[in-house]
Image (cartoon, rainbow, N blue to C red; front, side, top):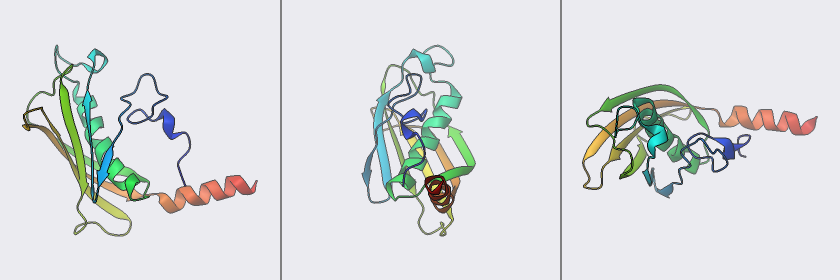
Length: 145
């Protein structure tokens, strides 16, 4: 089961010419990727717009869940901007689930962005609501028509 048109996702859709086009790797309860933001995503000169930084963190958390076969929506997101996130420089983006705090429907995750030296530039925590069953029902209803 896959949500409709994931290739158009702003964060990871490879058909979305305006998007970030992120590709993640996975291990256990973690997702990560490396990327370099181009000038389209600039806020102040040389640094990423705060909304893009927030999007990156949200995307990393969502991908942890997608790797587990879960499709969830963000219910709450908190971001801590520690240092400016540069554009035109390689950054690491990672996310992980807090299994101890999460329940069957509500998932708690964290994500962070590091520079090439491993310095944390931004951190986020999020609460996600699992929509997997709802999406599956909608797809089954549409297929039955």
